[in-house]
Image 1 (cartoon, rainbow, N blue to C red):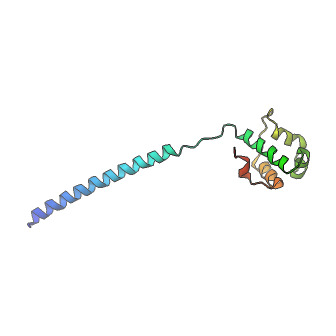
Image 2: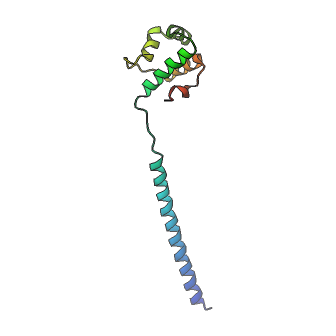
Image 3: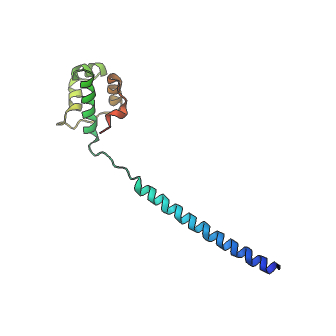
Length: 114
């Protein structure tokens, strides 16, 4: 085999390798796009309502009144009632949520479960 023929074959192989690399790159991009589309997250638009219902549920399961929960957490009874109420749109901090979870013996993640 002459040097010219060898060079031609190497060029052909290099060209095929470049094409294969391009195809792989494109398929990875497509796969990545498919994964991104499939993994779109659905956010709970009523997350505060979900949390407030779960706080009330776990408080009742523990056999506590809202006044007892308020005292144990170190908040006013009125504030706990507002948190649990469907009528008021009361926002509360992560610290408040944490304190309530400790008193009720429930992980914070349980409050966001539907």
